Length: 421
Picture: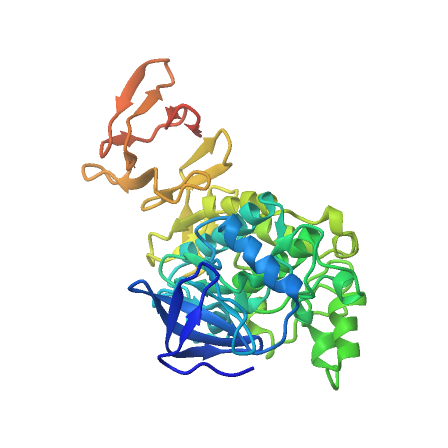
Protein backbone atom coordinates (compact mmCIF):
# COMPACT_ATOMS: atom_id res chain seq x y z
CA UNK A 1 0.00 0.00 0.00
CA UNK A 2 1.27 3.48 -0.87
CA UNK A 3 2.64 5.71 1.88
CA UNK A 4 1.10 9.15 2.29
CA UNK A 5 3.04 12.34 1.56
CA UNK A 6 2.87 15.46 3.75
CA UNK A 7 0.32 17.91 2.40
CA UNK A 8 -1.88 15.21 0.87
CA UNK A 9 -5.58 15.55 1.62
CA UNK A 10 -7.49 12.35 2.38
CA UNK A 11 -11.24 11.98 1.91
CA UNK A 12 -13.34 11.10 4.96
CA UNK A 13 -16.65 9.25 4.85
CA UNK A 14 -18.38 12.39 6.19
CA UNK A 15 -17.51 14.25 2.97
CA UNK A 16 -14.75 16.34 4.58
CA UNK A 17 -10.99 16.12 4.02
CA UNK A 18 -8.13 15.47 6.43
CA UNK A 19 -4.63 16.85 5.72
CA UNK A 20 -1.48 14.75 6.24
CA UNK A 21 1.26 16.63 8.14
CA UNK A 22 3.98 14.04 8.89
CA UNK A 23 4.64 10.45 9.93
CA UNK A 24 4.82 9.89 13.69
CA UNK A 25 5.06 6.09 13.95
CA UNK A 26 4.62 2.74 12.24
CA UNK A 27 4.00 -0.89 13.09
CA UNK A 28 2.96 -4.22 11.62
CA UNK A 29 -0.53 -3.05 10.60
CA UNK A 30 0.23 0.38 9.24
CA UNK A 31 1.66 3.89 9.55
CA UNK A 32 0.45 6.62 11.92
CA UNK A 33 0.45 10.19 10.63
CA UNK A 34 -0.01 13.52 12.34
CA UNK A 35 -2.95 15.05 10.53
CA UNK A 36 -5.15 18.13 10.62
CA UNK A 37 -8.93 18.41 10.46
CA UNK A 38 -10.91 21.61 10.97
CA UNK A 39 -8.02 23.30 12.77
CA UNK A 40 -7.32 20.41 15.17
CA UNK A 41 -4.60 17.77 15.07
CA UNK A 42 -5.36 14.05 15.04
CA UNK A 43 -3.50 10.78 14.62
CA UNK A 44 -4.39 8.96 11.40
CA UNK A 45 -3.72 5.22 11.31
CA UNK A 46 -3.23 4.25 7.66
CA UNK A 47 -3.20 0.52 6.88
CA UNK A 48 -0.32 -0.94 4.90
CA UNK A 49 -1.86 -4.42 4.89
CA UNK A 50 -4.95 -5.57 3.08
CA UNK A 51 -8.11 -5.91 5.18
CA UNK A 52 -11.56 -7.26 4.35
CA UNK A 53 -14.76 -5.33 3.79
CA UNK A 54 -16.00 -6.80 7.10
CA UNK A 55 -13.06 -5.15 8.88
CA UNK A 56 -13.81 -1.81 7.22
CA UNK A 57 -17.54 -1.98 7.98
CA UNK A 58 -16.83 -2.99 11.60
CA UNK A 59 -14.68 0.14 11.98
CA UNK A 60 -17.53 2.24 10.63
CA UNK A 61 -19.96 0.74 13.15
CA UNK A 62 -17.53 1.26 16.07
CA UNK A 63 -17.23 4.94 15.16
CA UNK A 64 -21.01 5.26 15.14
CA UNK A 65 -21.28 3.57 18.57
CA UNK A 66 -18.60 5.78 20.16
CA UNK A 67 -16.03 4.96 22.84
CA UNK A 68 -17.10 2.74 25.78
CA UNK A 69 -15.22 5.07 28.17
CA UNK A 70 -12.73 7.94 28.13
CA UNK A 71 -9.88 5.45 28.58
CA UNK A 72 -10.05 4.50 24.88
CA UNK A 73 -8.27 6.25 22.00
CA UNK A 74 -11.32 5.33 19.95
CA UNK A 75 -11.67 5.68 16.16
CA UNK A 76 -13.40 9.01 15.48
CA UNK A 77 -13.41 9.41 11.69
CA UNK A 78 -13.05 6.89 8.88
CA UNK A 79 -11.49 7.59 5.48
CA UNK A 80 -12.94 6.38 2.23
CA UNK A 81 -11.05 3.62 0.44
CA UNK A 82 -8.38 5.41 -1.62
CA UNK A 83 -4.70 5.29 -2.56
CA UNK A 84 -4.93 1.51 -2.34
CA UNK A 85 -6.01 1.48 1.31
CA UNK A 86 -7.91 3.31 4.08
CA UNK A 87 -7.47 4.50 7.66
CA UNK A 88 -9.11 6.12 10.65
CA UNK A 89 -8.44 9.22 12.75
CA UNK A 90 -8.28 9.32 16.54
CA UNK A 91 -7.16 11.71 19.28
CA UNK A 92 -3.41 12.14 19.72
CA UNK A 93 -1.73 10.43 22.63
CA UNK A 94 -0.71 12.92 25.34
CA UNK A 95 3.03 13.47 25.76
CA UNK A 96 3.16 12.36 29.40
CA UNK A 97 1.87 8.87 28.51
CA UNK A 98 4.33 6.07 27.73
CA UNK A 99 3.96 2.65 26.12
CA UNK A 100 3.39 -0.28 28.45
CA UNK A 101 6.38 -1.99 26.82
CA UNK A 102 8.62 0.82 28.09
CA UNK A 103 7.67 -0.13 31.66
CA UNK A 104 8.45 -3.79 31.00
CA UNK A 105 11.89 -2.81 29.66
CA UNK A 106 12.46 -0.44 32.63
CA UNK A 107 12.78 2.55 30.29
CA UNK A 108 9.99 4.13 32.34
CA UNK A 109 9.06 3.41 35.95
CA UNK A 110 5.94 4.09 37.97
CA UNK A 111 6.58 6.91 40.39
CA UNK A 112 4.60 5.16 43.12
CA UNK A 113 2.79 1.94 43.92
CA UNK A 114 -0.37 4.07 44.02
CA UNK A 115 0.11 4.95 40.35
CA UNK A 116 0.63 1.28 39.45
CA UNK A 117 -2.55 0.30 41.28
CA UNK A 118 -4.49 3.12 39.61
CA UNK A 119 -3.31 1.94 36.19
CA UNK A 120 -4.52 -1.59 36.93
CA UNK A 121 -7.91 -0.30 38.05
CA UNK A 122 -8.31 1.89 34.96
CA UNK A 123 -7.42 -0.99 32.64
CA UNK A 124 -10.05 -3.16 34.34
CA UNK A 125 -12.62 -0.38 34.24
CA UNK A 126 -12.01 0.23 30.53
CA UNK A 127 -12.63 -3.39 29.59
CA UNK A 128 -15.59 -3.59 31.97
CA UNK A 129 -17.32 -0.82 29.99
CA UNK A 130 -16.27 -2.35 26.67
CA UNK A 131 -17.77 -5.73 27.58
CA UNK A 132 -20.84 -4.02 29.05
CA UNK A 133 -21.45 -2.57 25.56
CA UNK A 134 -21.46 -6.09 24.12
CA UNK A 135 -18.00 -5.81 22.55
CA UNK A 136 -14.93 -8.00 22.81
CA UNK A 137 -11.44 -6.59 22.27
CA UNK A 138 -9.89 -9.77 20.82
CA UNK A 139 -6.24 -8.63 20.75
CA UNK A 140 -5.19 -7.49 24.24
CA UNK A 141 -1.38 -7.26 24.39
CA UNK A 142 1.41 -5.05 25.71
CA UNK A 143 1.14 -2.72 22.72
CA UNK A 144 -2.40 -1.59 23.58
CA UNK A 145 -1.68 0.68 26.53
CA UNK A 146 -0.19 4.10 27.18
CA UNK A 147 0.23 4.92 30.88
CA UNK A 148 1.11 8.07 32.83
CA UNK A 149 3.82 7.04 35.34
CA UNK A 150 2.85 9.76 37.85
CA UNK A 151 -0.93 9.39 37.95
CA UNK A 152 -1.51 5.89 36.60
CA UNK A 153 -3.97 7.24 34.03
CA UNK A 154 -4.37 4.86 31.08
CA UNK A 155 -5.14 5.24 27.37
CA UNK A 156 -6.17 2.09 25.47
CA UNK A 157 -5.26 2.18 21.78
CA UNK A 158 -5.51 -0.04 18.66
CA UNK A 159 -9.26 -0.33 19.02
CA UNK A 160 -9.82 -1.21 15.35
CA UNK A 161 -9.97 -4.90 16.29
CA UNK A 162 -12.95 -4.45 18.65
CA UNK A 163 -16.06 -6.29 17.47
CA UNK A 164 -19.45 -7.29 18.80
CA UNK A 165 -19.38 -10.34 21.06
CA UNK A 166 -19.42 -13.50 18.94
CA UNK A 167 -18.08 -11.82 15.80
CA UNK A 168 -14.54 -11.79 14.41
CA UNK A 169 -12.92 -9.92 11.52
CA UNK A 170 -9.85 -12.13 11.33
CA UNK A 171 -7.84 -10.62 14.22
CA UNK A 172 -6.67 -13.26 16.71
CA UNK A 173 -3.90 -11.61 18.77
CA UNK A 174 -0.37 -12.34 19.91
CA UNK A 175 0.53 -15.84 21.08
CA UNK A 176 1.99 -14.73 24.42
CA UNK A 177 -1.33 -13.10 25.32
CA UNK A 178 -3.84 -15.42 23.64
CA UNK A 179 -6.01 -17.85 25.56
CA UNK A 180 -5.34 -21.53 24.95
CA UNK A 181 -8.63 -22.02 23.08
CA UNK A 182 -7.72 -19.26 20.60
CA UNK A 183 -4.30 -20.79 19.98
CA UNK A 184 -6.19 -24.05 19.37
CA UNK A 185 -8.23 -22.38 16.62
CA UNK A 186 -11.40 -21.03 18.25
CA UNK A 187 -12.66 -17.47 17.72
CA UNK A 188 -11.87 -14.85 20.39
CA UNK A 189 -14.60 -13.49 22.67
CA UNK A 190 -14.97 -11.79 26.04
CA UNK A 191 -13.78 -14.93 27.83
CA UNK A 192 -10.50 -14.91 25.92
CA UNK A 193 -10.31 -11.19 26.78
CA UNK A 194 -10.51 -12.15 30.47
CA UNK A 195 -7.49 -14.41 30.04
CA UNK A 196 -5.44 -11.76 28.22
CA UNK A 197 -6.42 -9.18 30.82
CA UNK A 198 -5.04 -11.40 33.61
CA UNK A 199 -1.74 -11.71 31.70
CA UNK A 200 -1.49 -7.91 31.34
CA UNK A 201 -2.27 -7.33 35.04
CA UNK A 202 0.36 -9.86 36.11
CA UNK A 203 2.98 -8.19 33.92
CA UNK A 204 1.97 -4.77 35.24
CA UNK A 205 2.46 -5.79 38.88
CA UNK A 206 5.32 -8.28 38.58
CA UNK A 207 7.23 -7.27 35.45
CA UNK A 208 7.49 -10.76 33.93
CA UNK A 209 5.21 -13.00 31.87
CA UNK A 210 3.11 -15.49 33.88
CA UNK A 211 4.08 -18.48 31.69
CA UNK A 212 7.70 -17.65 30.85
CA UNK A 213 9.58 -19.66 33.43
CA UNK A 214 12.11 -22.49 33.42
CA UNK A 215 10.44 -24.37 30.55
CA UNK A 216 10.56 -21.38 28.21
CA UNK A 217 14.13 -20.47 29.17
CA UNK A 218 15.27 -24.02 28.44
CA UNK A 219 13.44 -24.15 25.10
CA UNK A 220 16.17 -24.24 22.39
CA UNK A 221 14.07 -22.47 19.74
CA UNK A 222 10.73 -20.73 20.17
CA UNK A 223 9.05 -22.03 17.02
CA UNK A 224 5.32 -21.54 16.36
CA UNK A 225 4.77 -25.09 17.57
CA UNK A 226 6.63 -24.40 20.83
CA UNK A 227 4.70 -21.14 21.27
CA UNK A 228 1.41 -23.03 20.96
CA UNK A 229 2.66 -25.52 23.54
CA UNK A 230 4.19 -23.19 26.17
CA UNK A 231 1.47 -20.53 25.94
CA UNK A 232 -1.43 -22.77 25.01
CA UNK A 233 -1.87 -26.52 25.39
CA UNK A 234 0.86 -26.94 28.05
CA UNK A 235 0.87 -23.49 29.66
CA UNK A 236 1.92 -23.62 33.33
CA UNK A 237 1.88 -20.63 35.67
CA UNK A 238 5.38 -19.84 36.89
CA UNK A 239 4.13 -19.80 40.49
CA UNK A 240 1.67 -22.68 40.25
CA UNK A 241 1.36 -24.33 43.67
CA UNK A 242 0.71 -27.79 42.26
CA UNK A 243 3.20 -27.87 39.39
CA UNK A 244 6.73 -26.56 40.06
CA UNK A 245 8.21 -27.45 36.66
CA UNK A 246 8.06 -23.89 35.29
CA UNK A 247 9.35 -21.78 38.18
CA UNK A 248 11.01 -18.37 37.62
CA UNK A 249 14.75 -18.62 36.91
CA UNK A 250 17.06 -16.62 39.16
CA UNK A 251 19.07 -14.14 37.11
CA UNK A 252 16.44 -14.14 34.35
CA UNK A 253 13.10 -13.41 36.01
CA UNK A 254 14.42 -11.10 38.72
CA UNK A 255 11.34 -8.82 38.67
CA UNK A 256 8.80 -11.44 39.70
CA UNK A 257 11.25 -13.11 42.12
CA UNK A 258 11.72 -9.78 43.90
CA UNK A 259 8.15 -8.48 43.73
CA UNK A 260 6.10 -11.63 44.40
CA UNK A 261 6.71 -11.64 48.18
CA UNK A 262 6.32 -7.84 48.44
CA UNK A 263 2.75 -7.47 47.21
CA UNK A 264 -0.13 -8.62 49.36
CA UNK A 265 -1.36 -12.21 49.67
CA UNK A 266 -4.76 -11.29 48.26
CA UNK A 267 -3.06 -10.42 44.96
CA UNK A 268 -0.93 -13.55 44.99
CA UNK A 269 -4.00 -15.72 45.59
CA UNK A 270 -5.88 -14.00 42.77
CA UNK A 271 -3.20 -14.79 40.19
CA UNK A 272 -2.78 -18.36 41.46
CA UNK A 273 -6.51 -18.78 40.85
CA UNK A 274 -6.55 -16.93 37.51
CA UNK A 275 -3.74 -19.08 36.08
CA UNK A 276 -4.82 -22.38 37.59
CA UNK A 277 -5.34 -25.20 35.11
CA UNK A 278 -9.09 -25.06 35.81
CA UNK A 279 -9.40 -21.45 34.65
CA UNK A 280 -6.89 -21.79 31.81
CA UNK A 281 -8.97 -24.60 30.33
CA UNK A 282 -12.46 -23.42 31.33
CA UNK A 283 -13.06 -20.00 29.74
CA UNK A 284 -16.47 -19.29 31.27
CA UNK A 285 -15.01 -19.66 34.79
CA UNK A 286 -12.37 -16.96 34.31
CA UNK A 287 -12.16 -13.87 36.49
CA UNK A 288 -14.10 -10.88 35.19
CA UNK A 289 -12.94 -7.28 35.42
CA UNK A 290 -15.32 -6.56 38.29
CA UNK A 291 -13.67 -9.28 40.39
CA UNK A 292 -10.20 -7.96 39.53
CA UNK A 293 -11.28 -4.44 40.50
CA UNK A 294 -12.50 -5.66 43.89
CA UNK A 295 -9.21 -7.50 44.50
CA UNK A 296 -7.06 -4.56 43.39
CA UNK A 297 -9.04 -2.18 45.61
CA UNK A 298 -8.28 -4.52 48.52
CA UNK A 299 -4.60 -4.17 47.66
CA UNK A 300 -5.03 -0.39 47.59
CA UNK A 301 -6.76 -0.53 50.99
CA UNK A 302 -3.61 -2.09 52.48
CA UNK A 303 -1.27 0.48 50.94
CA UNK A 304 0.18 2.90 53.53
CA UNK A 305 3.16 5.23 53.96
CA UNK A 306 5.99 4.03 56.21
CA UNK A 307 6.63 6.55 58.97
CA UNK A 308 10.34 5.61 59.02
CA UNK A 309 11.38 5.88 55.37
CA UNK A 310 8.35 7.79 53.95
CA UNK A 311 7.90 5.23 51.16
CA UNK A 312 4.76 3.29 50.28
CA UNK A 313 4.39 -0.18 51.76
CA UNK A 314 1.64 -2.61 52.68
CA UNK A 315 -0.08 -3.17 56.00
CA UNK A 316 -1.12 -6.78 56.50
CA UNK A 317 -3.98 -8.12 58.57
CA UNK A 318 -1.89 -7.91 61.75
CA UNK A 319 -1.58 -4.70 63.72
CA UNK A 320 2.16 -4.49 63.01
CA UNK A 321 3.64 -5.10 59.54
CA UNK A 322 7.16 -4.79 58.14
CA UNK A 323 8.00 -2.11 55.58
CA UNK A 324 8.92 -3.61 52.19
CA UNK A 325 11.53 -0.85 51.73
CA UNK A 326 13.38 -0.34 55.02
CA UNK A 327 12.30 -3.43 56.97
CA UNK A 328 11.13 -1.41 59.97
CA UNK A 329 7.79 -2.06 61.69
CA UNK A 330 4.66 -0.31 60.43
CA UNK A 331 2.06 0.04 63.18
CA UNK A 332 -1.64 0.17 62.34
CA UNK A 333 -3.73 1.48 65.24
CA UNK A 334 -6.96 1.96 63.35
CA UNK A 335 -8.77 0.54 60.35
CA UNK A 336 -11.83 1.72 58.45
CA UNK A 337 -14.38 -1.02 57.84
CA UNK A 338 -16.52 0.10 54.89
CA UNK A 339 -19.89 -1.17 53.76
CA UNK A 340 -18.78 -2.10 50.22
CA UNK A 341 -15.05 -1.58 49.81
CA UNK A 342 -13.36 -3.77 52.39
CA UNK A 343 -11.12 -2.71 55.27
CA UNK A 344 -8.64 0.17 54.93
CA UNK A 345 -5.52 0.47 57.07
CA UNK A 346 -5.37 3.97 58.60
CA UNK A 347 -1.87 5.31 59.20
CA UNK A 348 -0.43 8.85 58.87
CA UNK A 349 -0.64 10.17 55.27
CA UNK A 350 -3.04 7.43 54.21
CA UNK A 351 -5.24 8.65 51.35
CA UNK A 352 -8.74 7.23 51.66
CA UNK A 353 -10.31 6.25 48.32
CA UNK A 354 -13.63 4.46 48.07
CA UNK A 355 -14.77 2.47 45.05
CA UNK A 356 -14.02 3.68 41.52
CA UNK A 357 -13.92 7.35 42.48
CA UNK A 358 -10.38 8.62 42.01
CA UNK A 359 -10.85 11.76 44.12
CA UNK A 360 -9.76 11.24 47.76
CA UNK A 361 -12.45 11.15 50.42
CA UNK A 362 -10.04 11.78 53.29
CA UNK A 363 -6.42 11.82 54.43
CA UNK A 364 -5.08 10.69 57.81
CA UNK A 365 -2.97 13.21 59.74
CA UNK A 366 -1.06 13.27 63.02
CA UNK A 367 -2.38 15.81 65.51
CA UNK A 368 -0.11 18.84 65.90
CA UNK A 369 -0.87 18.93 69.63
CA UNK A 370 -0.37 15.24 70.36
CA UNK A 371 1.61 12.84 68.14
CA UNK A 372 -0.34 9.92 69.63
CA UNK A 373 -3.61 11.18 68.16
CA UNK A 374 -4.55 10.48 64.56
CA UNK A 375 -7.28 12.40 62.76
CA UNK A 376 -8.99 12.05 59.40
CA UNK A 377 -9.44 15.21 57.34
CA UNK A 378 -12.52 15.55 55.16
CA UNK A 379 -11.32 16.09 51.57
CA UNK A 380 -14.77 15.67 50.03
CA UNK A 381 -17.09 18.43 48.80
CA UNK A 382 -19.82 17.52 51.27
CA UNK A 383 -20.02 17.11 55.04
CA UNK A 384 -19.82 13.75 56.80
CA UNK A 385 -22.28 12.70 59.46
CA UNK A 386 -20.51 10.93 62.32
CA UNK A 387 -22.12 8.77 65.00
CA UNK A 388 -20.05 8.40 68.18
CA UNK A 389 -19.91 5.14 70.19
CA UNK A 390 -22.44 6.59 72.66
CA UNK A 391 -24.94 7.38 69.86
CA UNK A 392 -24.39 11.14 69.44
CA UNK A 393 -24.32 12.67 65.95
CA UNK A 394 -22.01 15.41 64.68
CA UNK A 395 -21.07 16.95 61.33
CA UNK A 396 -17.56 17.04 59.88
CA UNK A 397 -17.52 19.71 57.20
CA UNK A 398 -15.07 19.81 54.25
CA UNK A 399 -11.43 20.44 55.40
CA UNK A 400 -12.37 19.69 59.06
CA UNK A 401 -10.70 16.93 61.10
CA UNK A 402 -12.19 13.94 62.88
CA UNK A 403 -9.98 12.51 65.68
CA UNK A 404 -9.93 8.73 65.24
CA UNK A 405 -11.60 6.59 67.85
CA UNK A 406 -12.70 2.97 67.65
CA UNK A 407 -16.45 2.63 67.26
CA UNK A 408 -16.98 5.84 65.26
CA UNK A 409 -19.45 5.38 62.41
CA UNK A 410 -18.94 7.71 59.44
CA UNK A 411 -21.55 8.40 56.78
CA UNK A 412 -19.49 9.83 53.92
CA UNK A 413 -22.54 9.95 51.63
CA UNK A 414 -26.02 8.45 51.60
CA UNK A 415 -24.54 5.22 50.25
CA UNK A 416 -20.94 5.24 51.48
CA UNK A 417 -20.39 4.53 55.17
CA UNK A 418 -17.73 3.02 57.39
CA UNK A 419 -16.75 2.29 60.99
CA UNK A 420 -13.41 2.82 62.74
CA UNK A 421 -12.21 -0.47 64.20
